[in-house]
Image (cartoon, rainbow, N blue to C red; front, top):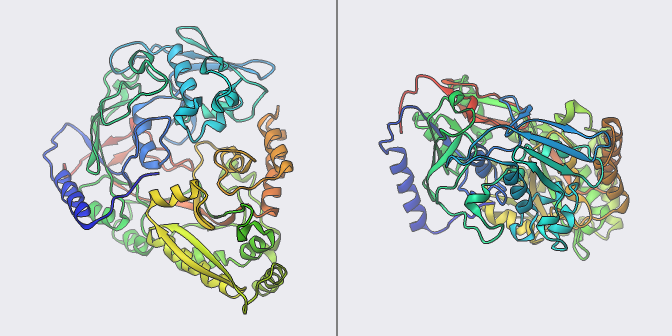
Length: 536
């Protein structure tokens, strides 16, 4: 996540710079102007984590597989692929494609990129999802050299990937950002490579023209891209507008074509009335929840407290009265949009009236040593958006009646997620936005020892079901194992689910080819811009 600056002078300088950027004389043939909702922390495709980075990087780097406008996986740099009968080898056949400097993209570049993803020094936050590749886990833990990874260039256009065991999801991860091939001839070294605001050699439809920190990122069409003749827009400008209200105001002045800041719930009805063709609200795979710190010694290490708090969240009140923005209340870890609803289930208490839930919650709290006369003091942290504050205030009020006194702690997005990463929290707002339509990224984060396991949860039975799902030989077997793993996680209250999120963006009706989809991926190669009224 990104670091937000502080101090009045710094803020003033940033505002001034942004105003200059919006008013700059960029008079190019066709320019798409995007509010990117945040400042990139890096443009290293294998270290980036935020959506504001992914929006840019998906235009610069092409994976072996990619997405169409509707979020379906299609061929990318690989024109075709096949899996062996035993499920342990995947062979990718690369198309004739070139890097932005004109050099050919080869299978060696794909090997190089995957090796770098797994190196400990890269610190890729999603390296875990590539552990099914032979020796990947040992390389990521520093026990084997990168050269031991089970990926081989059979020739310039053929990549062979060897898996430890058959795997139910790994193919889709070759459409994800961490797996992108990298230009071996340009980067040269797997380690100690600088990813600053320079102009890197890229494989995607756009290349970096400049990155002015806290002002803008400008991408230009890459003439060497293998489908360049089908890319309509010549230039894309990303503005790092972190405040959603500022983004709405900018959009209203016709200096933005897309705003990737979530529309503030307080403004949604107004905007739907004033500009109905511009408001895009659609279901997504994104999941909104609170993460308890279950490390020994923490109050939420006590399952009884987690149970009590989970069953007394009035989720319908939050979605229907506090926010009213299309979010859907849920007690499930896996969203209803995932795999066409194959995994979402309700918690056992879902059918109970709230009075029964509160009574049971008070019993659990009393067993744990707390009641209204001896309440539990708990810190609840969230990143500083008004909608997050409103949700937190509502949840804190709901918990007061069972003997939990909540202190609210708000931080900027970078510091919030860094505190979660370091385990410096008691109960933290969190959101999971999976890159593929599969439970792995939402459940494997709770596996014992996973780098993404911020809550210190551990349950060998849960781990067993996750590993069985990952290595399942059939979709039906994988589904059964994922369902079993989710049930254990829900019984253990590894999180307090709140809502399945809907995306709420402002998108100009002059754009053609921008399609809402549950994965929330919107490749700009399919987008064309008609009748743009005002250039920045």
